Image (cartoon, rainbow, N blue to C red; front, side):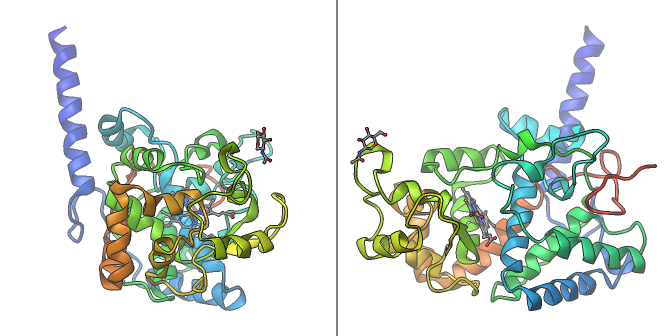
Length: 350
Ligand code: HEM
Ligand SMILES: *[C@@H]1O[C@H](CO)[C@@H](O)[C@H](O)[C@H]1NC(C)=O
């Protein structure tokens, strides 16, 4: 009994210290961190060049890549918040581990994260990551993880469109698990502020992080199905969502004449390709697209951040960089519970 208790205590202390380290400042060579400056000095340039090439072909790619990183990080770190958050460093739970990049294999029939409702037919940018990885493997075989490749490409996606540069802490290893079911633990676009706050809290992120990171919607578009419930008979009231600006409502109705319309609408009206604070200005004018966007302006726990970012672009850009670094620590894997995948869509076969 005593030894059992003792080992539980040691385990708890160990997970505590790992948790703290995983959230500490990067820069040095602390546990789990690794800078590619010696092991693969070309890494960041390769990733940036590959992204630029793909963005040249399709200018919507940066939005897709940014969202991929968010979705990779946010799967399943559910309940028992703190404990599980630390625990996830050991146990191979999810987090930013490249799990979203994995394909199902015909032999084992695994249903992967890619197939989950929030990702299926809408997650984009896989080819860009796969090509960067091929070039990384050619330059420095077995050194740069897919999870790091995605984190760096997401940073570059924001920077190339006007976001603030930040150093991405690197040294994450790739996970070996991907699950369709866990993909459904991503926050819902139909959620209210309480649901969103709770979802972020479960991942160790604050109310401010929620509002800041939602600013990722300064880029990209959403399909009609993700918000058309707001346009008519919202929550069975027989009326549209009262928090939509009437002029914007008629615009959205034209874009989405039927709930199943295949059209897409920019998440940041008039500024889809610039990484700026106009998303918050739009929320303040009730020009938000998703319920999960507009509620940030309507709830007193979040509205003061929206107001501030709508006025102070600089605050948004620097906070966004900081919150992205924080998000990137979720479920940080190391060589004991991860691997450096050779191909991002497949786990290694040893
Ligand atoms: C707060 C909870 C969030 C919810 C409920 C949410 C939901 C959604 C939905 C429903 C779409 C449209 C998908 C489609 O129809 O194809 C979308 C797009 C997008 N989201 Fe989020 N999101 C959230 C947070 C974030 C965060 C934190 C980021 C990045 C930091 C992000 C980045 C993006 C981007 C860039 C797009 C556009 C993708 C594209 O154009 O392909 N989102 N989001
Ligand atoms: C709104 O939806 C509810 C439930 O589906 C339905 O009973 C009601 O008749 C609808 N109202 C209008 C105005 O369409």
